[in-house]
Length: 475
Image (cartoon, rainbow, N blue to C red; front, side, top):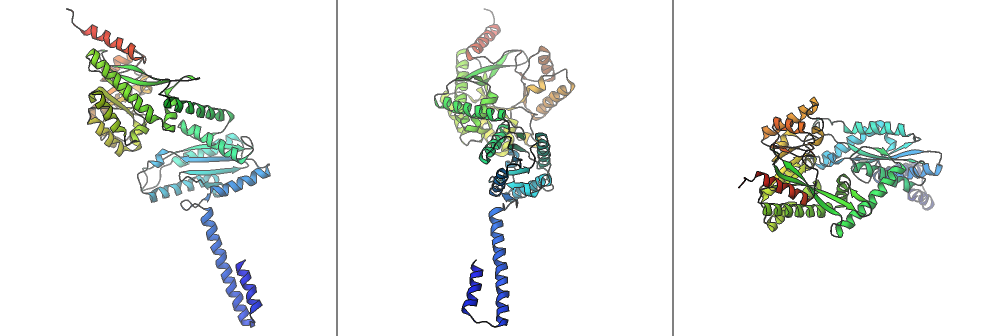
């Protein structure tokens, strides 16, 4: 508009020769081209992501509004969120930008450039599939995307791989309004990201699960705030080859008001998500450590208690100090405590976690590596881990020793532990045959229903007392 105004003013205020007229027109055309190029560049900056070059979310929102207004055009809307393996990559931001760009190119091969958008989050992509509402077809497309994303990258990043979580909702099947469609897609993503599963399509059942989870998470937070209402500890004995109880594992249980017993596999992730795991973890540490102090003092037995530690707790800078303060306040020796950390939690930030585990070991605390063999630990890191005991998962014990594959896996872990100087503990032992075979193969500690289910402190104390009386010589 400004250019055309200037052009008209020239003719209104100046008498120009034909030659000058041609030169002015030429100059104005050049100016118009420059203005047009400037507008295009500005539009590109406003609409495109600088890292991937993809159109941004607000452009997709406008496109979906048009589709919804047209109504005959059904479509699927998907959110693709890269998993935590992407966030753990130990490279510069420039390297992560390259990996993000390569990932966008991989997705683009499947859905096309015009259907792929960049989210407001740097680790998230948005997809629209116009005219596609068939769930089986959507699943096939999502499966191709997840498989493509997981492929290893080219050198020098040939050791890098990461996955993703995907949530999908379909218009008009799952929502009639754009805002509801976005919410339902987020719900589908959140439910299956929480369960560590890959993409899934929204359904009313998924929505119900989400709302129940939200309600239960609110109750959990309230119970923590009101003095850990409904929470209590149970203990499962840990024995040696002579069936002698050496210690126990402390396990957290929760009876939620109005819901009854909620399994740890359900409420622990909720506590981690809400951040209340820090308060719960502190509560568990104090009560389990206080309980083992009571047992050691009253029965004169050098027993230990094993306590599970959440990855979220390990990430806290205050964690080592909290453990140290409880030990000092209870005047409890460090060897009375075994802390269990999962393989995946150690690999989240190996260098930082290794340093913390070394600090804990310096207090005399023993470190157990739980779920060994189910994750992705590196032997090069395993050699550096300040670990005292490898815990063999129940899933390897279930078919042991009758399943040759389970036998090979258990033997491999036991051999690896011997080479690294670690003790071993097998969990989930339910049969005498399993116990005898594990002891014969060199496993040091055993835990499982063969000896006892998790029981309360009073019942476990009776087992301790019975064991103590049986080992005392007759007068």
